[in-house]
Length: 69
Image 1: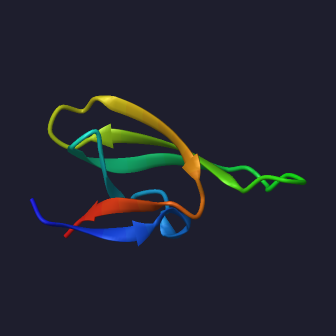
Image 2: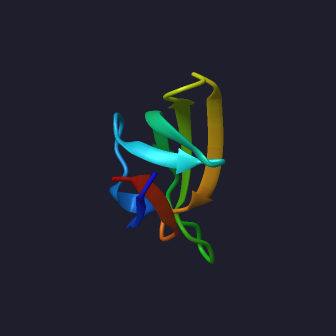
Image 3: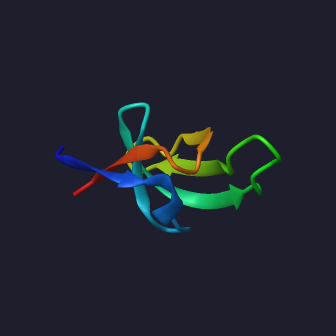
């Protein structure tokens, strides 16, 4: 499977992402506001396309994530 890197800020509900080596579809996306000394954080819930396993990831909004092509 070929992938490309994309900013986590560009993710939306229904977009695809590679989590834990498996292609997943994003089903929920929550964005927290940046704090006084911190960065905005993303909490995303994704469901695997093949195994339909639910995966949850928390990451800074400026991180790059793998997106399948």
